[in-house]
Image (cartoon, rainbow, N blue to C red):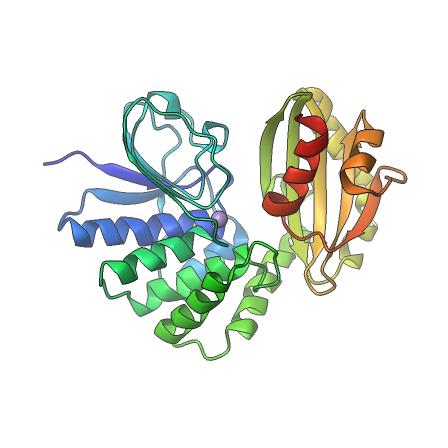
Length: 310
Ligand SMILES: [Mn+2]
């Protein structure tokens, strides 16, 4: 029997990283007439991911918490800092991603990155170009992922290609109103409001190494910012704790209002002036609302890098 190849997304798995792994493992098994590709996750999945899996009748993929000496396909990330533990000694077979490239490897591999709104868009495109028929339920999962990653097409990361793919996936999944389906998913996602401060911050949290030090940036989306208003002080306290006990230069949670298309920033940093320089807006009492900010990848991280990583 040929060795297993694990298809795995990033740490703190989101819908796109889980569903892209599932869809891509399925595609590879079909194309290579094998069952050696297995989608796995790095840790427990979040609420909307579980919701979509249940809705379309899938099990949660098994957890792979260490990839040392294993064969892996990375989806939805390429930086080792975001990858499963043990990645330094894993054998990487392929990378399928839509994030900025920060990748070095000792062998030539298939490295497939497109500047689209979600990894599931890229995987869908691969089904099409390989003439593989996509299952209705898998299409539903992938649609959920594209809608989450593009904030129901509102995010600046959403391209014309993603919009076409959303329409195609909705058709295959037989979902008549994808906007409504997107809101359904975001309502589940917004119920993160029930999480503890720490779990709220960590629900979608990524590390970024910059010249001045390590940044930890979490994002939460909501349809109602006021839901978080009375928790801001305790969230800030937690951000401060995470910052000092884990050696961060800055920790941020930004809460994105997807209806009004802006984000409330809660920031623990020793360099508030730098933050103001990056965003053109000053923190007041460690917080500030910034209109038009929806994307960590396309807006928040690049703005911070301009100031803190030059
Ligand atoms: Mn993604």
